[in-house]
Figure 1 (tube, rainbow over the protein chains, first blue to last red):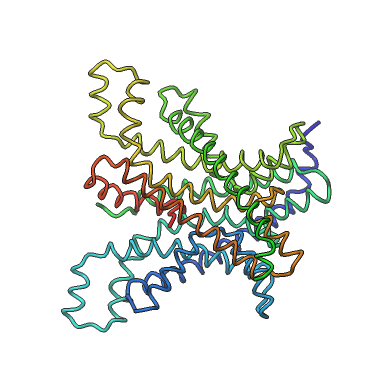
Figure 2: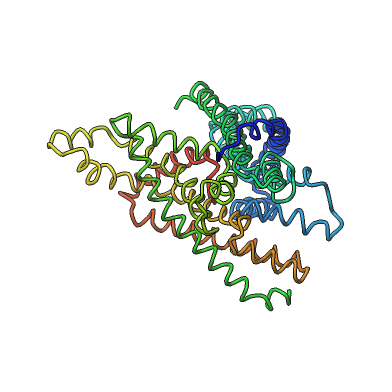
Length: 218
Length: 236
């Protein structure tokens, strides 16, 4: 018998624990990405000499390099310089920074989507810059961005499995360690895949639905 | 830094393996993209359905899970794949599933009149697809395909986890034998970045080469930019 059902059932609690870590990773990572991405998008838009081009380059660099290598750098290189966190924290921060580069682009399109008249009206009323951003531009920009945030959340959920390579004990790492200790890989890996699917598929259907409902009328 | 120069041949071998993996899985990705993308547009549910299941399963689970499954779980069915084969298969099928959605989207968004004109001229469905719909869809497919390919390239780093001796694997080897962690990882980070930039430039060149007309391209790019933001792919 290839598939051992009793074994598959017996490992469910462990895998669910891994899944919970994956979910925590994803939620915290998305939070970091959403905030950092917004900061990066605003800095790029402000066109501050030196700072804005530097941020633009960082965004492009992060998008052009693999998440795995970024995680390795954070996990293996930073401790040499005395900066070390546990694997989970490193993982959250790295995946957050990685996705913030993608989020920055989403925010940029949101900011660009705010009609020119809004900027002009704010200037005509001679509102201070911080008020223009926080009370006029960002509330309108972020609204159009929210459905896309859902898509990134799901992507990050699946991508976070990469962090098993830097010993974050999430779903994938749990499945792997069950495999190495029992010499049975079929059940844990299949079940891990199934769990990823069971969460991400309904979630993406839901996001699609939200997207259609809240899509800005063009 | 001296360790990097000393071990340069090893990194070079790794780079070649990375490029080999990227080219092979890129080719598989294109085959999967067109076969599955077109199958999902079929009139017959018996063709449409399995393609839909394939695409949703490969998009709904992690690439790394798929890769480990091909490498560690398939042997339980008596199928022992070479690490390179398992890696290429997982990468090609996974990114192919994303690209299949690109093909489907591009073809189904063609102007209706084009297809109807084909019907009016008595062209068979296959002929319409081959002579009308696909050629017209290529310019629309190119930018998102470019994104998928950049994504694929970056994901080749994961093959090191199933013991394929790519750039990342070699870097780990050099790291453990010299301890030059920072230099090694920063070097390959830059190497991956240059590869992605080259790939993005190639895509842009192809876009220009196959543009139907320039003005239409500008509009299309704007629309696709919005679209591609949805898939993380967004490229550079």
